[in-house]
Image (cartoon, rainbow, N blue to C red; front, side, top):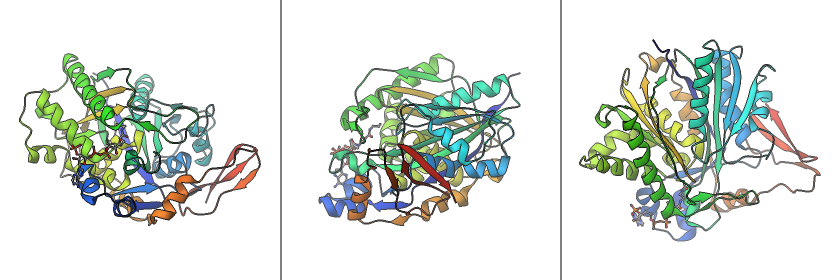
Length: 389
Ligand code: COA
């Protein structure tokens, strides 16, 4: 009999500040209906000058360590596409901030917004090999597009930490997976750029093509039928994209695309993404957090995941929600991570967007802005200096 492996604990973190889309719309003259209805976004998290993927990743993971200890964690996989270093894995800083044991392997994974799903699957493989071990998976990203570009409205920032183990308390991840890769230029970020480049309409088309491709492979691999799923967690670069993808999948499978059915299938997965914005690798797992935190009892019910990363790689897979999972949720903490953010006005957001460390190798302290448990205190000699409060 195969052993049960999956998500044992899940915790989220986001940034210090929040920009409501009403402020962006007032600045650029866009009808707010386009943001609220057209793309399905209400607000977006904006990192403080002393926050980054490390501070958010550590903040998401710290409660997991506090609950489960560190003894069984021998691997940390950090998934991101807003990497802070071309060589050193961001997870090494998190390993240090959390005081994890030295007998740990730490690595960073990248494939646009898909990376965290690769991390989850690799973690499952490691636990399969040695069920005594647990793997800490961290997905952390800051989504940044050019000011005054169409992508500006779909920025955001967040981290999701997941503890992967045998006999998981939350979600058992199943075989098979449906896989899809296609070489497309819908979204990318050359090494010399801070902000991503995106062809928005191309990315919508590429996402839909990937949804079809993963589903086709999933069924060929002997996966479940569509009607078995209690809910669908999609990658959400903007929440309306989940609706587009589900409608496309239903059409592709020959089903009607009734508005109420689509809302029932995925409405609860969008609650966190709609107020946080795009969190790249974390987005699909923020969808899971929102679903588990809000849905009626899902014990024993299969949930579908569609993880998409531009470029593009995608994976469709299923997880079964474990009986008794509600006792292990972090609903209050997750909601607090969102509600504790401080609203920033448009000028303040723009200044943060343009904030950049000088690249001269000197000593540069960051303004103390975040009230979170970890901060990026500055850089010195090209080294990032982190603090635990
Ligand atoms: N009220 C309601 N809806 C409105 C509206 C209004 N006043 N004005 C426009 N809309 C709708 C449009 O009809 C459209 O809906 P549809 O897609 O269902 O047709 C939607 O709002 C967006 O309008 P559009 O003209 O396409 O906006 P845009 O040119 O600004 O582009 C994105 C929107 C999402 C493509 C753009 O923000 C983007 O590129 N974001 C980045 C996406 C990304 O990260 N992709 C990579 C990862 S998958």
